[in-house]
Length: 239
Ligand SMILES: O=C[C@H](O)[C@H](O)[C@H](O)COP(=O)(O)O
Image 1 (cartoon, protein in one colour):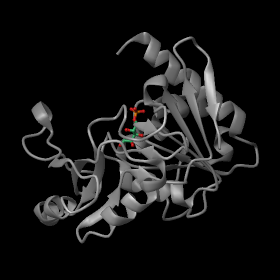
Image 2 (tube, rainbow, N blue to C red):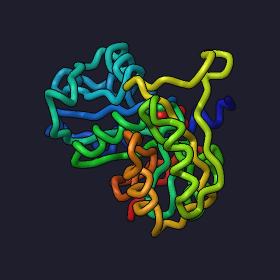
Image 3 (tube, rainbow, N blue to C red):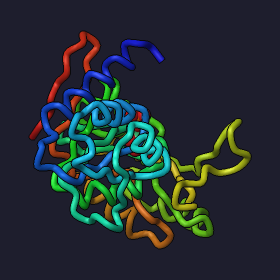
């Protein structure tokens, strides 16, 4: 990956933490992915880091919290979270998101839904001019019960906008399907470009299929998105 992309991730993450984490915040959600690495790094540099507890969104997130000397909690203990930081695979003009490129969507949505504020950190490649499905062409990640994958693949064909869907495989790293932190499979379903006003409906339709645990469509959850630009600036997107 180019150092420009890496630099933009870091700048976005640092700025999101610096501008939004307050001394009064005692419970902080820490998401998953390669951009949140810099959120955890920044949190770990804070003098008052022992004054808040961090809630992970999966295995990688838990490791980030521990390796940066942060206090680890769990969403079972803290179902009310003051603020959460997470990455995204794509962000539309209304701050709806596609997430789950790293197969972590269920616990991410759990933490986001428990949090009073959700700040997204990303590099410039993640920002769509308007609709989801523009830059992120791999499809909407859907976490499914393993026994239901074939049924869900068939059910998806009946939904408006459906183009194709497939179970995600591990490639050279895993013979067979990717298995999530919740022991589920991931289906990537291509719906082309998703109109802003249809994100929520599409999420509900997919979620309504028996066998679906959660979708990677995050509608109306984002407080603000911090986007690291190629020129070294960071754009703050709010509604
Ligand atoms: O499943 C993974 C998560 O949804 C990530 O937050 C998302 O894929 C973005 O990751 P990255 O910051 O590596 O692009």
